[in-house]
Image (cartoon, one colour):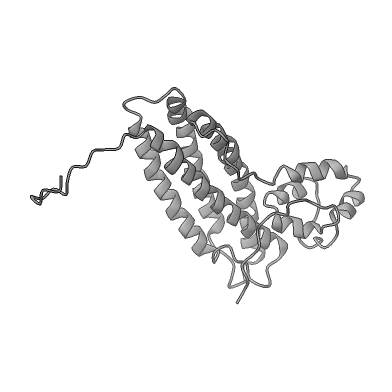
Length: 241
């Protein structure tokens, strides 16, 4: 049985780590390496220091750029609506927009290169593209309609867009279940190359991020604008109301 891929990014990046290891442990690093033409897949056994030296790259600047990919998990100290919304926008909306294009690119690569493998996640790239379109539409509604209303203090009608967002969150949850099924819970086969492993590490982070994103909105932000309804009884003549 294959062990679950460890996706936790290291607390501190080291120039002596292999670039293949960084690509797998730090979702988003593959886009940086690809832009700089650093081979993290077949050539992933060399250290970041050696890879930077071989291409005359500024190692401190590279480490700093990679360090920005280590996503914070802490909530803002103030959990009033404006602070929560700003946190959601920076920590989740911007991150989702950066995550999905790279995951789609890697998924297409894996499906093409490993098309003969029985373990290849066929249809994954197309499904990620569908998720991207749904998320982009959802986030635009929040950014252009709902969040400005909440920052302004809400109104008597704000429950309607909140209800719509809650329904769409349920759809996102179902998409995550489908994503887990396609990727065996983001667990790569033992023979997976670094690109495949990095793809699944990124999918694991996307899934965790989206779950946390939905949790903040459903359980911390939205309830501040939803008036609890008084108990109406069970609808029978039992007298419980």
